Image (cartoon, rainbow, N blue to C red; front, side):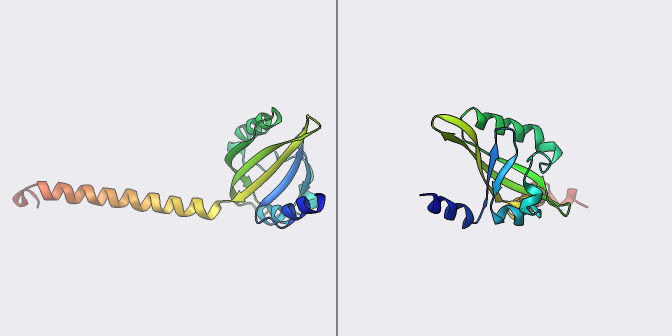
Length: 147
């Protein structure tokens, strides 16, 4: 069973990590290093230093809720080692061994590209709706009133 779980972690296309009850990384897969730009050695320690300032309180609350035994899904953003912001969809799962919560497993998917595309679509729709309003206005205004 342990080899199968290890394969699930290491072969996963998303970042998979284990965090102890103090919020310190215990283990991470290679994808986590790709997403963050940090080595495994650099990542071992608290997750808080990675989380963007505007998302830190929210991310800590999700972590605390997971420590209460609740699986949590949420979006957050982190600082990549090179300084850019990376958008993540995170699933936190409590680790319970012999009925005792000992930490949190996390799976994080990089959704940065999806967010960029969503924003581009949103902006195009705003422009399109604005243009549509102008067309609608021109349709209902008599031509002699438009100069």
